[in-house]
Figure 1 (cartoon, rainbow, N blue to C red):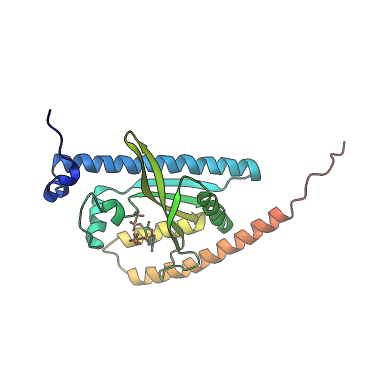
Figure 2: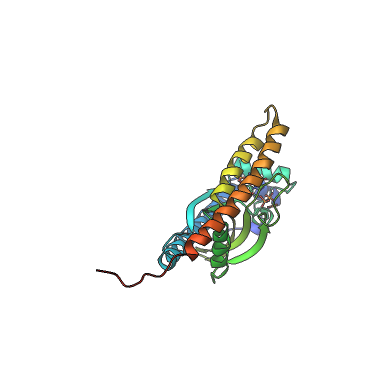
Length: 230
Ligand code: 0O2
Protein backbone atom coordinates (compact mmCIF):
# COMPACT_ATOMS: atom_id res chain seq x y z
CA UNK A 1 0.00 0.00 0.00
CA UNK A 2 1.41 3.42 -0.93
CA UNK A 3 0.86 6.33 1.38
CA UNK A 4 -0.33 9.63 -0.03
CA UNK A 5 2.08 12.53 0.35
CA UNK A 6 0.66 15.03 2.81
CA UNK A 7 -0.26 18.28 1.02
CA UNK A 8 2.14 20.33 3.16
CA UNK A 9 5.03 18.22 1.76
CA UNK A 10 4.09 18.80 -1.87
CA UNK A 11 6.28 21.18 -3.87
CA UNK A 12 5.01 24.73 -3.42
CA UNK A 13 4.69 25.17 -7.18
CA UNK A 14 2.24 22.28 -7.39
CA UNK A 15 0.12 23.45 -4.49
CA UNK A 16 0.14 27.01 -5.80
CA UNK A 17 -0.49 26.15 -9.44
CA UNK A 18 -4.19 26.89 -9.96
CA UNK A 19 -4.25 24.51 -12.94
CA UNK A 20 -3.10 21.46 -10.98
CA UNK A 21 -5.73 18.93 -9.90
CA UNK A 22 -4.60 19.16 -6.27
CA UNK A 23 -4.94 22.92 -6.28
CA UNK A 24 -8.38 22.71 -7.86
CA UNK A 25 -9.52 20.20 -5.21
CA UNK A 26 -8.06 22.39 -2.47
CA UNK A 27 -9.85 25.44 -3.90
CA UNK A 28 -13.15 23.51 -4.06
CA UNK A 29 -12.81 22.42 -0.44
CA UNK A 30 -12.01 26.00 0.58
CA UNK A 31 -15.13 27.32 -1.18
CA UNK A 32 -17.23 24.55 0.40
CA UNK A 33 -15.99 25.66 3.83
CA UNK A 34 -17.05 29.25 3.06
CA UNK A 35 -20.48 28.14 1.78
CA UNK A 36 -21.00 26.09 4.94
CA UNK A 37 -19.98 29.05 7.13
CA UNK A 38 -22.53 31.22 5.31
CA UNK A 39 -25.25 28.63 5.98
CA UNK A 40 -24.29 28.48 9.69
CA UNK A 41 -24.51 32.28 9.91
CA UNK A 42 -27.76 32.61 7.93
CA UNK A 43 -29.44 30.05 10.22
CA UNK A 44 -28.10 31.80 13.31
CA UNK A 45 -29.22 35.27 12.18
CA UNK A 46 -32.71 34.03 11.21
CA UNK A 47 -33.04 32.36 14.60
CA UNK A 48 -31.88 35.49 16.47
CA UNK A 49 -34.36 37.56 14.47
CA UNK A 50 -37.31 35.26 15.23
CA UNK A 51 -36.38 35.21 18.90
CA UNK A 52 -36.22 39.04 18.91
CA UNK A 53 -39.63 39.13 17.20
CA UNK A 54 -41.20 36.98 19.92
CA UNK A 55 -39.69 39.16 22.65
CA UNK A 56 -40.35 42.57 21.08
CA UNK A 57 -43.27 42.16 18.70
CA UNK A 58 -41.31 43.35 15.66
CA UNK A 59 -38.35 42.04 13.74
CA UNK A 60 -34.74 43.20 13.79
CA UNK A 61 -33.66 42.12 10.32
CA UNK A 62 -35.22 43.74 7.29
CA UNK A 63 -33.29 41.56 4.83
CA UNK A 64 -30.27 39.33 4.62
CA UNK A 65 -27.84 39.09 1.71
CA UNK A 66 -24.89 36.75 1.34
CA UNK A 67 -22.27 35.95 -1.25
CA UNK A 68 -19.06 34.07 -1.83
CA UNK A 69 -16.45 36.12 -3.68
CA UNK A 70 -16.02 34.89 -7.26
CA UNK A 71 -12.58 33.49 -8.25
CA UNK A 72 -12.12 36.57 -10.53
CA UNK A 73 -12.89 38.91 -7.66
CA UNK A 74 -10.53 36.99 -5.33
CA UNK A 75 -7.71 37.27 -7.90
CA UNK A 76 -8.43 40.97 -8.46
CA UNK A 77 -8.15 41.63 -4.71
CA UNK A 78 -4.99 39.48 -4.40
CA UNK A 79 -3.38 41.69 -7.07
CA UNK A 80 -4.75 44.96 -5.66
CA UNK A 81 -3.51 44.17 -2.14
CA UNK A 82 -0.21 42.60 -3.42
CA UNK A 83 -0.73 39.23 -1.65
CA UNK A 84 0.91 36.07 -2.97
CA UNK A 85 -1.73 33.80 -4.46
CA UNK A 86 -1.33 30.83 -2.14
CA UNK A 87 -4.29 28.62 -1.21
CA UNK A 88 -2.71 27.79 2.16
CA UNK A 89 -2.40 31.42 3.24
CA UNK A 90 -5.43 32.87 1.38
CA UNK A 91 -7.89 32.35 4.29
CA UNK A 92 -5.55 34.35 6.54
CA UNK A 93 -4.83 37.09 4.00
CA UNK A 94 -8.40 37.68 2.83
CA UNK A 95 -11.20 38.18 5.33
CA UNK A 96 -14.17 38.74 3.07
CA UNK A 97 -14.31 35.68 0.80
CA UNK A 98 -17.57 34.83 2.58
CA UNK A 99 -19.75 37.88 3.17
CA UNK A 100 -23.11 38.46 4.83
CA UNK A 101 -24.97 41.75 4.86
CA UNK A 102 -27.62 42.28 7.52
CA UNK A 103 -29.96 45.12 6.62
CA UNK A 104 -31.93 46.59 9.51
CA UNK A 105 -34.40 49.47 9.67
CA UNK A 106 -33.04 51.66 12.46
CA UNK A 107 -29.59 52.70 13.73
CA UNK A 108 -30.33 51.19 17.18
CA UNK A 109 -30.95 47.84 15.51
CA UNK A 110 -27.31 47.69 14.34
CA UNK A 111 -26.08 47.65 17.93
CA UNK A 112 -28.83 45.24 18.97
CA UNK A 113 -27.76 42.78 16.28
CA UNK A 114 -24.06 43.18 17.09
CA UNK A 115 -24.75 42.49 20.79
CA UNK A 116 -26.68 39.34 19.94
CA UNK A 117 -23.89 38.08 17.69
CA UNK A 118 -21.26 38.88 20.34
CA UNK A 119 -23.16 36.75 22.88
CA UNK A 120 -23.09 33.64 20.69
CA UNK A 121 -20.75 31.17 22.41
CA UNK A 122 -19.66 29.42 19.21
CA UNK A 123 -18.50 32.44 17.22
CA UNK A 124 -15.66 34.88 17.85
CA UNK A 125 -15.42 38.49 16.73
CA UNK A 126 -11.90 38.80 15.30
CA UNK A 127 -12.12 42.38 14.06
CA UNK A 128 -14.54 45.29 14.18
CA UNK A 129 -14.53 48.27 11.81
CA UNK A 130 -17.00 50.97 12.74
CA UNK A 131 -17.62 53.07 9.64
CA UNK A 132 -20.73 54.50 11.35
CA UNK A 133 -18.93 56.38 14.12
CA UNK A 134 -16.06 56.97 11.67
CA UNK A 135 -17.53 57.19 8.13
CA UNK A 136 -15.15 56.87 5.17
CA UNK A 137 -14.13 60.08 3.37
CA UNK A 138 -16.58 59.29 0.54
CA UNK A 139 -19.49 59.11 3.04
CA UNK A 140 -19.68 55.28 3.34
CA UNK A 141 -21.29 54.10 6.61
CA UNK A 142 -21.69 50.53 7.84
CA UNK A 143 -20.51 48.31 10.69
CA UNK A 144 -18.08 45.57 9.61
CA UNK A 145 -17.28 42.52 11.74
CA UNK A 146 -14.92 39.71 10.87
CA UNK A 147 -16.18 36.57 12.60
CA UNK A 148 -14.63 33.14 13.14
CA UNK A 149 -17.47 30.68 12.44
CA UNK A 150 -17.33 26.94 13.22
CA UNK A 151 -17.73 24.54 10.30
CA UNK A 152 -18.11 20.84 11.05
CA UNK A 153 -16.14 18.63 8.66
CA UNK A 154 -15.80 14.83 8.69
CA UNK A 155 -12.28 15.28 10.06
CA UNK A 156 -13.25 17.75 12.79
CA UNK A 157 -14.28 21.34 13.35
CA UNK A 158 -12.54 24.29 11.70
CA UNK A 159 -13.04 28.03 12.08
CA UNK A 160 -13.87 29.96 8.92
CA UNK A 161 -13.78 33.74 8.55
CA UNK A 162 -16.95 35.52 7.52
CA UNK A 163 -17.28 39.27 7.00
CA UNK A 164 -20.57 40.58 8.37
CA UNK A 165 -21.73 44.04 7.33
CA UNK A 166 -24.59 45.51 9.38
CA UNK A 167 -26.28 48.64 8.05
CA UNK A 168 -29.64 50.37 7.81
CA UNK A 169 -31.88 50.30 4.73
CA UNK A 170 -30.88 53.93 4.05
CA UNK A 171 -27.14 53.20 4.37
CA UNK A 172 -27.58 50.23 2.04
CA UNK A 173 -29.50 52.31 -0.50
CA UNK A 174 -26.65 54.83 -0.57
CA UNK A 175 -23.84 52.19 -0.66
CA UNK A 176 -25.40 50.25 -3.53
CA UNK A 177 -25.44 53.34 -5.77
CA UNK A 178 -21.95 54.42 -4.70
CA UNK A 179 -20.70 50.86 -5.45
CA UNK A 180 -22.25 51.13 -8.93
CA UNK A 181 -20.43 54.41 -9.57
CA UNK A 182 -17.10 52.88 -8.48
CA UNK A 183 -17.49 49.98 -10.89
CA UNK A 184 -18.07 52.26 -13.90
CA UNK A 185 -14.64 53.10 -15.24
CA UNK A 186 -15.57 55.39 -18.13
CA UNK A 187 -18.11 57.76 -16.66
CA UNK A 188 -18.29 61.49 -17.28
CA UNK A 189 -18.68 63.91 -14.35
CA UNK A 190 -17.37 61.26 -11.93
CA UNK A 191 -15.91 63.85 -9.53
CA UNK A 192 -19.19 65.79 -9.46
CA UNK A 193 -21.22 62.62 -8.88
CA UNK A 194 -18.90 61.62 -6.00
CA UNK A 195 -19.40 65.06 -4.46
CA UNK A 196 -23.18 64.74 -4.86
CA UNK A 197 -23.09 61.31 -3.21
CA UNK A 198 -21.10 62.75 -0.32
CA UNK A 199 -23.84 65.36 0.18
CA UNK A 200 -26.50 62.64 0.01
CA UNK A 201 -24.57 60.58 2.60
CA UNK A 202 -25.03 63.47 5.04
CA UNK A 203 -28.77 63.53 4.31
CA UNK A 204 -28.96 59.74 4.74
CA UNK A 205 -27.25 60.14 8.11
CA UNK A 206 -29.77 62.81 9.17
CA UNK A 207 -32.68 60.68 7.94
CA UNK A 208 -31.42 57.63 9.88
CA UNK A 209 -31.01 59.77 12.99
CA UNK A 210 -34.48 61.33 12.71
CA UNK A 211 -36.25 58.04 11.94
CA UNK A 212 -34.55 56.42 14.91
CA UNK A 213 -35.72 59.25 17.18
CA UNK A 214 -39.31 59.06 15.89
CA UNK A 215 -39.29 55.26 16.33
CA UNK A 216 -38.19 55.72 19.97
CA UNK A 217 -40.96 58.26 20.60
CA UNK A 218 -43.57 55.91 19.11
CA UNK A 219 -42.37 52.88 21.07
CA UNK A 220 -41.87 54.77 24.35
CA UNK A 221 -45.35 56.26 24.17
CA UNK A 222 -46.97 52.83 23.82
CA UNK A 223 -49.08 52.33 26.95
CA UNK A 224 -49.57 48.88 28.40
CA UNK A 225 -52.98 47.49 27.56
CA UNK A 226 -55.55 48.43 30.23
CA UNK A 227 -58.62 46.43 31.16
CA UNK A 228 -60.94 45.94 28.21
CA UNK A 229 -64.22 47.86 28.31
CA UNK A 230 -67.27 45.86 27.28
P1 0O2 B 1 -17.97 43.59 -2.73
O1 0O2 B 1 -18.42 43.57 -4.14
O2 0O2 B 1 -19.01 44.14 -1.80
O3 0O2 B 1 -17.43 42.28 -2.27
P2 0O2 B 1 -9.26 44.83 4.45
O4 0O2 B 1 -10.31 43.74 4.59
O5 0O2 B 1 -9.14 45.65 5.71
O6 0O2 B 1 -8.00 44.33 3.91
P3 0O2 B 1 -11.10 46.04 2.67
O7 0O2 B 1 -11.39 44.85 1.83
O8 0O2 B 1 -11.09 47.36 1.94
O9 0O2 B 1 -9.72 45.87 3.39
O10 0O2 B 1 -12.12 46.03 3.87
P4 0O2 B 1 -13.36 46.91 4.21
O11 0O2 B 1 -13.03 48.35 4.31
O12 0O2 B 1 -13.91 46.28 5.45
O13 0O2 B 1 -14.34 46.77 2.94
C1 0O2 B 1 -14.79 45.56 2.47
C2 0O2 B 1 -16.18 45.65 1.85
O14 0O2 B 1 -16.93 46.71 2.44
C3 0O2 B 1 -16.21 45.96 0.37
O15 0O2 B 1 -16.05 44.78 -0.36
C4 0O2 B 1 -17.60 46.58 0.19
O16 0O2 B 1 -18.61 45.59 0.20
C5 0O2 B 1 -17.72 47.39 1.46
N1 0O2 B 1 -17.17 48.75 1.31
C6 0O2 B 1 -16.05 49.23 1.91
N2 0O2 B 1 -15.86 50.50 1.57
C7 0O2 B 1 -16.86 50.85 0.74
C8 0O2 B 1 -17.21 52.06 0.07
O17 0O2 B 1 -16.51 53.08 0.14
N3 0O2 B 1 -18.34 52.05 -0.71
C9 0O2 B 1 -19.13 50.94 -0.82
N4 0O2 B 1 -20.21 51.03 -1.59
N5 0O2 B 1 -18.81 49.77 -0.21
C10 0O2 B 1 -17.71 49.73 0.57
P5 0O2 B 1 -15.51 44.78 -1.86
O18 0O2 B 1 -14.64 43.58 -1.99
O19 0O2 B 1 -14.88 46.08 -2.21
O20 0O2 B 1 -16.77 44.64 -2.75
